[in-house]
Every structure is written in C-alpha cells, then in structure tokens.
Length: 318
Image (cartoon, rainbow, N blue to C red):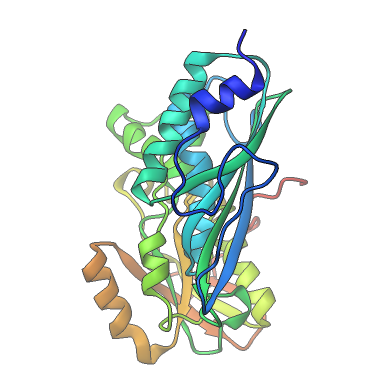
C-alpha cells in the first residue's frame, strides 16, 4: 500500500517556480514582492457538513480551492500559493486522482502553486490555506463601507442553495434547472478578476459564502453602518424565480449561502466605473441597495414596504 509520502509525491507534487521552496521540506518558502502585503486565508470542507460523503472528488478538488480563491477576491488580492491538508479515511487512489485533477485544473487557471501541506488518516476533511499579494493599503476590508455607498453583487444569487434543497428533497427541480443550479453548487467561479478590478474603486467587499444577509451583515457590523436592500433588484435565475413567492425561495436568495459571489460597496461617484468593469469582464454586476447610517439591514419590496426576514444565513454552531 502507498505511504503518505508516496501519495503526496504522486498526486500533489509539482514544480513551484514562483516559490523559493515548495513541497518536500519542513516548510515552504515564499518571497513577497516589494510594496506588497501578504494576504492569507484558510477554509475547511468537512464531509457531512459541507458536502455529501459520496460527492464527486473532481468537484471537491475544484471547490476546495475555489472557496479560498473567493476569499482572495474579496480582499482584492492576487493569489499565488496554496497548501493542502487532507484527512482521509483510507487510501483510494482513484478518488485522489480525480480530486487532484479538479484541484489543479482550477489552480492552473489562476496560476496557483501548491507548495506544501499534510495528509493523515481520519474522517474526510479538506483544508486549504491560500496566500496572495496586495499592494500596501489596497486591500478591500469589511470595515471600510461608508454611508451613501451603493451596494453591489456579482453574478446571480441562490442557485447553489436551490440545488442543495433539491438534493435534500425539499424541492423538485426540472432536470435542466437542477443541472444549472448544481453547477453553481459544485463548481463556483471565484471572482478573482473582479476583486483585482475593484482596487481603488470599492470601499469594502466580502464573498457570499453563508448567505447575502449574513455576509453583508459582517460588513455592516465591522463598518458600524446599516443598509437598505431592494428585494426586486436582486439578481436571480429563472429556476429560482419559480420559487420566489415561497419561503424556500426567499431563503435560498437571502440566506442560503454557497454563492461565492462578491458583495461590495462603492461610492456613488464610481458607479460608472463599476459598469465599465462589468462590461470588461463580461460579468453581471447588480446594484441592490445603499449603505445607511441607521445600524440595521432593511429589505424592501418594490412598493417600499418592508419584507420581514426571520433568518440571515448559515452558522456552523446554530
């Protein structure tokens, strides 16, 4: 049977020309360019909590890296390096081959080098730490939203949560609708290019992992501000539109999570710049509300009435 080091060498060791030292020693060595700060983020995916035990390993490889890239995007950081810690119930070389293929397909797309990590026996658990660079003072922070800012989101919201609801038997989607929503759940597209384009344009940003209201709420709390959201402006797919009058549909849109789109705030004076970024990237960017001085988040219908929302998003310990 293959040893831990055989598995690392076979499935996860590749050249790392962008690092001083990569896989194979007690620690990796990286050199940050002059005038840059090092951005570091870690995300863990746990079997039974974040994915089904029989999930496709190729998709898991993609998503394990994608959720970390999404954090880099939210900080306006250029990602460069990653480490991978794997807890495996046993040696399944076919599973590892597919997992590493999914991981490296996305890594190659974003020029990410895997420079180290660890493997151990235990319940299936995937943990990636990603590192990137951002110019001094240029990172987008949750604490920098200002009263009067426009609130924007990228892409469409709620599809991943709707796919999960289908898989859990809470709703029955048409085959083509489920296929589209499942793509959002299993292979989210990290908005790295958008994050980089927002340097000097946006005041604050966050990626939507736990639900729009929960993640926007982090910006509001850190910035000591509030928000008003116009419900009818929220970007959704045709599949979700069919369920929008039901509690499930509103939950998926506002609190479902797993979107991995960016929510960001921008001064009104930069509105045209955001529109240019959308055109340049070929990416839907939607203005959904305004940052307010009153420290609460209000969701309004098209007629101005307030929509009561009982839940705000996913929390691991609730």
